[in-house]
Length: 471
Image 1 (cartoon, rainbow, N blue to C red):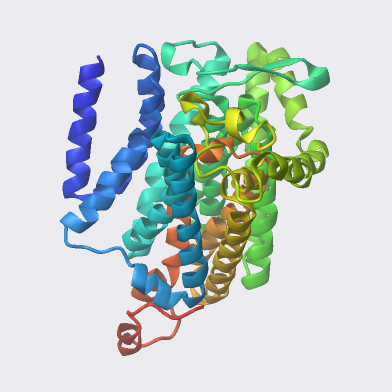
Image 2: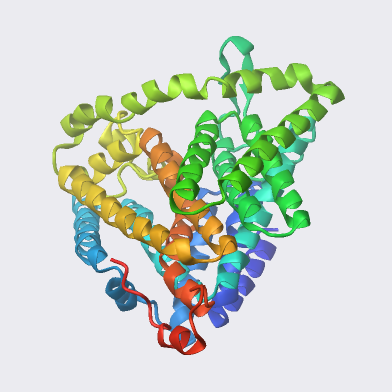
């Protein structure tokens, strides 16, 4: 069986190498399939987790095999304010990877650090290069949402009582649900409930945006049903922070739509319909005799708002001084606190047990200078994205409403990152976030190439093929 999987993976890599554009979709497929494959292989080797990173690396190589180039210079010409913080961030990451190698003599930890910090940046460049037209953006989103839908279905089937090997969880399966009792965290196809919950939350957010953006009633109904199903599946994973992410996404999305263009009524209808259909799905489970099983999940999910403030404080400010005390103001080196580093001599043995929050993890690895540079970089990216949001006011609703969904998705994840970094150590999660960011930065070029400037003549549109300078 292992040899068969290896042969299929090798064939997939060859296909990615010779057609990197289709390879983006294949990378997403690998990301969703690597966990069930790992469950079927004897010993469940942890190395399978990097299969998507290998596929994505081959995709990057395929860009150059086809004679294409990543648009680094074009990106910096369009967004001039990104160049200094990006250069500083790459430099500090390389220095801290060398720090890890010198301090521990462990090249695996240094490689984990390089993978964790550089994979989103490389995925950003691929996303920017891939999205030449708006159809390209819709194409990779469709592939990703197909995989997320498969995860949702398997989580619901697992809750219904099906227990095949591919539904088993690698790691803890139960958590205390408060007064409502013990909660079994469902994972479906994914290796853990946390990974499943992130992809389900991402799928729900993106489907809400698609619901507001699509024009036909049939597609809107399909998107609504999918978002509602994923919302229920998130509850069944027992991971409350993803419910908080969806709630924060809706708030940010409503703000962006109301701030930059009309369309709030359509968005409000979409949000209410998602909640309504989610309630219907929950009631169907209750009617099937699962009400007693569903109650602990609903009770645990209901505490997300009341516990969010305390958790945000405890995972950020409260941890910082302990992290600095344990690792020094220069940090312990990139990769020492990465997800999975505990298998290779990292984790608590080096950085201590206080680096659970995302910014605390960066502080432990890159030190105070690295954390400050990351904040600088995040501010520069946020400023560029807000300028794109203002630019999108002139785009058609089907494009602008989807863009605002992608924009709202990033800060919603940033808040989740502050409270817990574990899921953001997964290469597949980082690649998806990079693709989303790259797609947003490509929007001015996509919009112009689609003739999104209302009233612009054909000659004017042709003269605007070059990226607009929005920084």
